[in-house]
Length: 446
Image 1 (cartoon, rainbow, N blue to C red):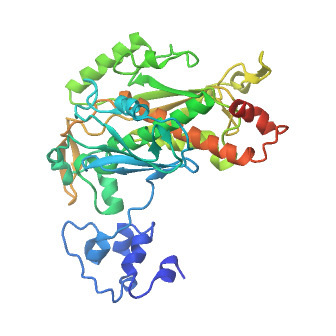
Image 2: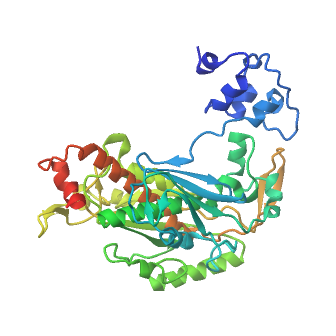
């Protein structure tokens, strides 16, 4: 008996479908009508209904939108809200108690992400002022869930009247319709980068944990815009001040000006650009990550590839390592003056065998050009007609400058979650003679 058959009775067909993750609109349209006997539901003959004549009205309203809005295990977050709804935010579960945390810790990260901060990002005017609703008292976390809200203020849903019936090429419009049969048209709803406000807010808390207890630092910067790139950044020495000295967030000032000029030029033509964000994590203890399916680089890849517009991920030497021989690529070990095992090079990007080795973690995330552009493009309508579309609304000509704090946030969320898992697994006995204690425990508990 199938899972649908085993959970079905004569009165709960709609509820059963509401809870089945795999039952898409297409599956419902092709389903045997005998699956829905005697439910008392009227058929839906609306031309706007994507499910066809086999849809039932209540069934259409109750389609389950699935999971995918939460991230992490020990340090777990859930984001919520739509681009043009009342607000967006995040709930954080698993934050340790007695962590010093202020609104400023969160706001300074949101200010780096917010729209309207320069001429090369979206002109949407939002202050993105955070409100801490729970979990923090008198500047300290209390161990209970932390809820953070940012209210939307500058909504213009009328800008999206056209895309309600016409799909934007390379945008989530068509795929959201295919999956859910309904979508938030204004601003793209959950597919909008505005959803990342919750991620960045949670990332600010994760960064505070890592800095307070482990002296870890996470810095991202724009490494490339289209074909303009920098190779003149020392990941051991680069500072936040160098990154924030220009509006494109590239620490190489000469290259940054070339990037800005290209973005300006492209913006005036109604087009958009993509590029690469590089991120470094410093003072990483050895031992984070797990073998096989939960490798640290796999967790980082999932986190970064969940960001809007992300299309590629690499760590360490990445794809360039395929041009080397083993003798050229291997990171040889040595013992430093403090008696620690180190590597002379870092082509592994700080991770070996899925576990951090104590060197800097260095990764890169590729972002595609913004899909909503001011040029006429060929597309189709919801009713299946071939049409033309010129994008409207306020969109980034290049997502890279605002993607920097987003990448930092997702990396921080992974690292703090892995740190908590490592502590839970390896430090419960607190055996000082264990290898795990000496590699990671010394750095955390001494």
